[in-house]
Image: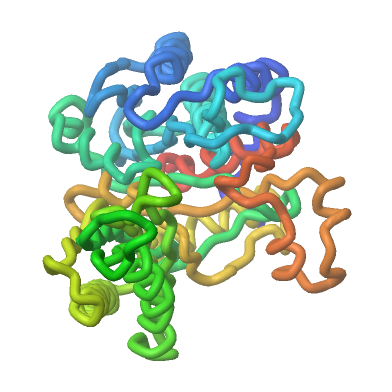
Length: 413
């Protein structure tokens, strides 16, 4: 038996203006904007909210946008989309590829904005079917982990009603038609760490008069690989990536400093603290062994929190997605090592559900090697942050439907 929320969602999304939404998506994809600079994107999203009848505000936490639709007694439901792009040169070859050199929507946030614009309009048009208050949020700077926090700090919940529940979704690689849900930990925390190694510079012909920070940095990169393999218990999950090494200005000059930038992925604060302590110890030890004139500078930088779905909230949303899209469409892939700042919008600890929508074009999926091994085929696909990441336009309508049905789980009485 289909629930009232599922029936209503199917009714409200039966005649979506898909061509118009596809045009919006292509326009956003052509004009990507980096974190904190989403001025055009925010203006387009706000325009759609105003047309749908929402009380709209802009400029929250930088470029953040909100829309509020009050529709009688009932819960306050928040729907969120992030808006920023990445410093990636697009290589998709799409006819609507990015027109901004070195910037690309390589993570699907253009699709997120399109989905939410469509869902906001559909829910507004069908307001006679539900009761409560909708809060929609266009969030800046998710890629830097600062946007949600900035909106809250800038008085987000003094401008809009505090939500009783928060809902969000993310484009992901995988064959079109799957809606992965995890009733608990779904995304890991991430922490950036910078290390500056101080040496003694000099001429490349006289290394004996120097302390070479490049060699020390190279030893550090190798030794840091043992942090996960030898200092994190096998039952835990963690990733340590050295994403950047910078040193020197010319081939025959031994520089005075070298910089290493790391990214940690963990599923608990305790593991993260243990890894940071190991990084400090290893950096100090390698610099001591090399005779560096100063101890290294180890700076813990930006971070993302873990994303932990409220189990009951996610169960209800997953069930309505199963009703709307059919058995076998909702899967539980377990926690991913990616990270999000969505949970920071739950400033008072409100329950939330965050899920994925798979977006890989059928031709790309069919051509992926790996046969019946789903994970092997997923590993072969262009993933989020790839210059080849290109969601299929066929997911525009379903992605609107996922948000509409999730909201109606809480709003239909």
